[in-house]
Amino acid sequence: QVCARQLCPFFRLGFTRRTTRSLDPGAANAMATENAVFVRGFDFGTTEDQIRSHCGSAGAITSVKFQGKGSAVVSYSSMAEASAACSSLPNTTIPGNSRYIEVKLDEGKRPTGKGKGKGK
Image (tube, rainbow, N blue to C red; front, side, top):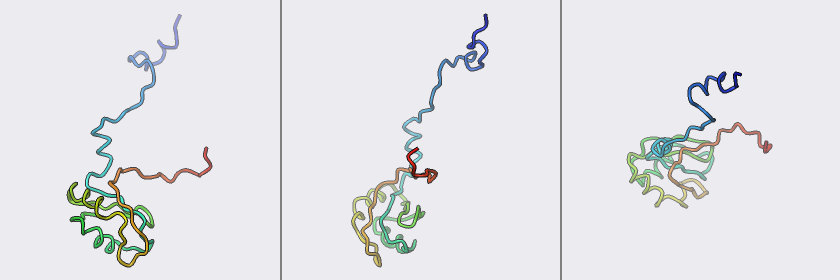
């Protein structure tokens, strides 16, 4: 008699069940941008120059990437500067804006936008 396990190439190679890939802790941290903070809550018409001048008070900015109308990822030249931004910039207002901003270390997680909002 031939059983299904003998016919399946995965069983012949020694795989007995499905396994999921798990990230090692180093790889999980690599997904996040090391020296970046996530800034949100500023007015929709805010320019990159306004963000650079306001967030630049915490350190040297290497890049600003908009993530939508009211959010951006600001990268600093060091982790110490990114931490300084997280402690000094929350609940401040960018000059010319009327809203307070939220600042936190960037975790690298972004919504994919593929959902239809139907809960399925």
